Length: 421
Image (cartoon, rainbow, N blue to C red):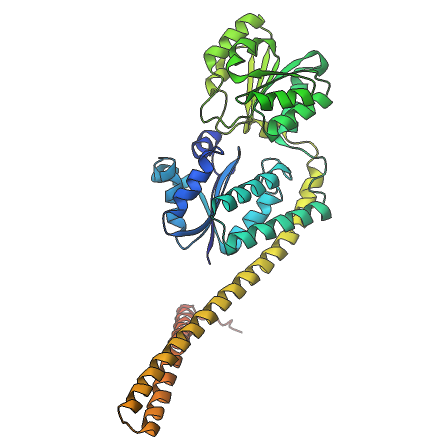
């Protein structure tokens, strides 16, 4: 078993690079099946959010995993490899736990990532790419995240990307109750944004989604209205705030559409918040006058208040995580030892049967039974101790070589100067 995580995230890459690797819910199962078909990757789970795309895998070929990630997206490996982080074994376990606990998130301690990891794990289970290693890993990770949430203040003053986006609206508009908001999409991020807007007094909420029934369900929940996605260009101008978080592979709001809306608004400012990955709103929109466009990276500048308690809690969370990393690695070692024992036992039984068959044939041919038995015992002993003997000799040679290196280093060291009295 060799755990590897191939990661491209907000620490390693800007948004314009990350969106090249983002996977829609439709693409993720295709990616899992393609990865499983390569033959060099035993298990796989793929996590794709607005901040990261990560592949969890049981493989002996970390570099090939990074190459596959680029190839699947038809990207040049040499160009994008500097943006990819590779975590192996113990470091990979620690990274998985820190991610689930929100310690690796753009907003320290944010809770959404745990739900996203659970969803990614469930999808991989459905596709059939989860085996013993990843099943145990994710179950352990989820348990650690629960412990961290219950035993530390990492979730104090809960701050998500959606709540930060809504706080941003308060900087632009003093009285939110007098403003109208258009929410594009129908996922968890949009629902959370709607919840925060509603709690801050916004009552004019419009929901747009490709599946009209989902938009309608959210509209009923928050006393708003629903509209089909193709109607965006005709209703955009009616809203002061636009928050978008769809899974579209291409932008759904272009510069031309926003320009037409601005003409109708007569220079009234328009706040656009793009929480999607890939982005829903063309970056060129930011060049227009009277438009304020923020994407998920730009929101990082808005996340400062209320973080001291979380930073202190993060230290305690790290101690919990480090302890649990060792617990998991002990399980891996046990499984590895069990597998070695199983293989050695199977090989021993094969050798026994082979020698027994040879001895039986020799006795049938009229050879002296005592001599046959003596030869059987000798050959079987030699075969059983051969592999362990080779391993022990190799370990001894490594120790001797290390002693020689240390001795040579000591020999090359200058002798200490003796002080003259």
